[in-house]
Image (cartoon, rainbow, N blue to C red; front, side, top):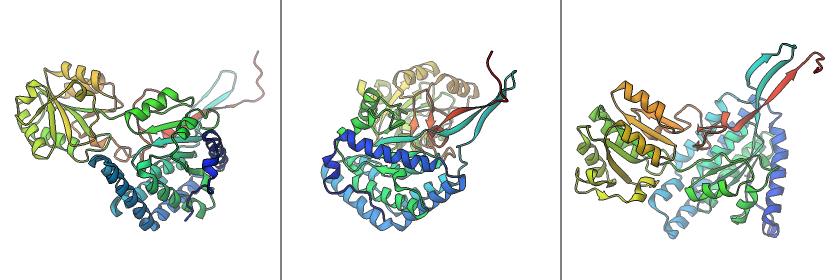
Length: 429
């Protein structure tokens, strides 16, 4: 296995800026190799990487056990430990996701549109890789493989900087992935992992304009805020998931209970988990919905009207409406109709994923049109906010901004385009 390590003292002897420059130049050289690959060559490389991940199950799980033990000693929350934990089934899912990316259509070379000018010039726009993508992320080790697969399939090289919580897991996953690439003759530098946890390296990545072509942050609000404030490199932001579900007055009670319970409790530590439940004053089964959540082990924090539904609901503070819990905690508010629900979402949503449950088609269409989030849903759990569930394969994140890409960012979101102009000797008058 090709374990990525620096020579003893080498990374420490370099300044953060020199380290990032060296890694970036190696990555850019590898990206030029990727840019020449055919669709089948990239797919074969990913299949080899998936096989290497499966063959490396034992060392990867051993590395993950070290991270889990360190996390427990540090007092990480149960939600954070769940995000960090790998087991044979989760690791198999990571390898399967890499293979699924291999089976997706290659976006590189895709012709977006064509046209011909009156003077005979023929124009076309064609998708191309972005180049070297820097990815800064926190505790989820699956991001290492997901990001590597998506970058490689779209012809990009990746420079990864994972969080200290998953240090050993990330190194083991990257090592396996790189050995798969080398087995088919590709440079391991196509997928690099920063070999130090020095926080100054993050700053060096953010200011490496001309070396790193785009930064993708994946983590909490403080990480994303720092990246957006300090970056001199274009940023594709993945903000926190303050996801709302609005139970409209015309919602089917059984559907509402089923969807709400799934949206919160299926996995509480993912960005698509519901964090605020809005119940319409005219919905007749609000008590049943909150009871099902409490009985499932969810702590509810509500406004005065929500607390009147069940004495076990705790009072909500102003901060609760703007909190991504990533745990079995949920804020609950009673709203006076559709407009009040949309106003609450506009004020408190992080523009990630928001949903309505209703049997009223007109209300559903209004919600889809008026809620300004990257993903807007009708009668579905917000836990479907995932690139794999959208048929995109593994995702690099849910982009909540408005430029370049929005929602689950998969292959197409990791490309840009260039104009191709074909003439027959035209000169501009």
